[in-house]
Image 1: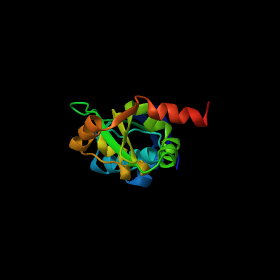
Image 2: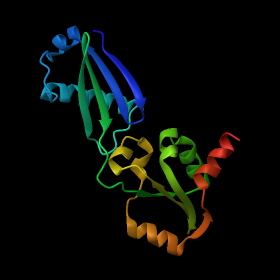
Image 3: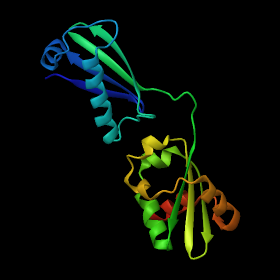
Image 4: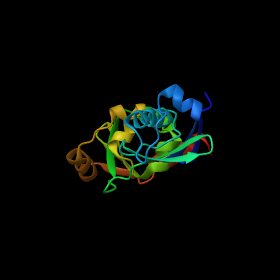
Length: 180
């Protein structure tokens, strides 16, 4: 199999399939529109690349264009842009400063690049971290640490109203403690 994959941007990739690859995969017929089998194959490749952190799926849908080349085809895949880009606010609650620090150190670079803002509040005995990203909630599900996130707008507003603001850049500040 002579399959080649190249990442051209965080949300765009190219897949080269030789004629032999197409036959092996049962994708021998080429038409103007990609076949259902090719779309399924491309979706699997996109999901695999997303799991590796090499491809941003966005809302989970992928656009696919096929071009015929000398001895095969090139399939270009790109994450579909949502009709309206929405920001996602997440609330994380920590019982102590150590939990907060470990959480911030454990965040992936991919998530930190999508971080628009963060705020840290002290409310009672706990620490409340509000993070705003330009990621869709579905793309955040692949991040393991987000299973503890609260996605309740009312609770986020109450935190802002009743909590004592400690920092407007807590994630950045805490991560600097690890790598000064």
